Image 1 (cartoon, helix red, strand yellow):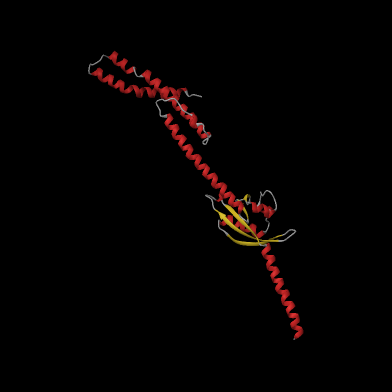
Image 2 (spheres, helix red, strand yellow):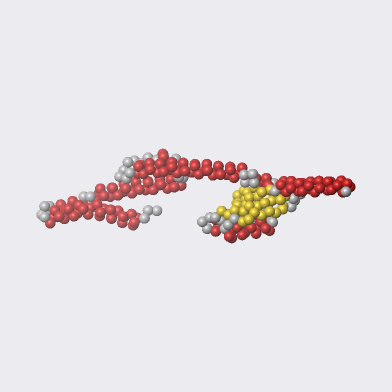
Length: 252
């Protein structure tokens, strides 16, 4: 709704600013007896009509510009600004809109580059061979890669980290990382199931501007194959030693 009192007050101030110089000149002419008072009054009142017209025209141009800027703010990457061309007036509105179009194109290019970088980072994140989980300050999983889905054998990962990894040493290390804002020593533990798995967890902290934005990155290395290979090597050496000792004992 239009503020009538504010509108009238601003218009009166504009009229006074426009007519003041003319009134001063008219007063100077009167005191020097160059014109009579009646003509001086008429001369002083002459700019009022043009001043009102100019003020209304400026008000319409500013209102139109404000409307277009509102549309640009609502959809900064849209093409509404580029289709706008206002009628030439007192203000360089079209020049200003042209500048907005140029900035919009720069902004769109920046958004495109940022989106491409995000997609590239996400692709690299999902190509990592090890399972990676990112948790927030409440130990809620907020991001994971494809290897993590394969590691846990599910299609979606969400909720508290303890729903997937309950080992006390790991939970303690995550809490310590969030509290101390520093990386923790790698932790090795077992995951029970149909087949026991041996896992090493590396914990890294991503600091934010404040403690609430802190994140913990957990990288899981599956050591099951390596452990089984090592156990097979130990068993082979033990069996070979036993088999060699038996004939030697007979000979002795």
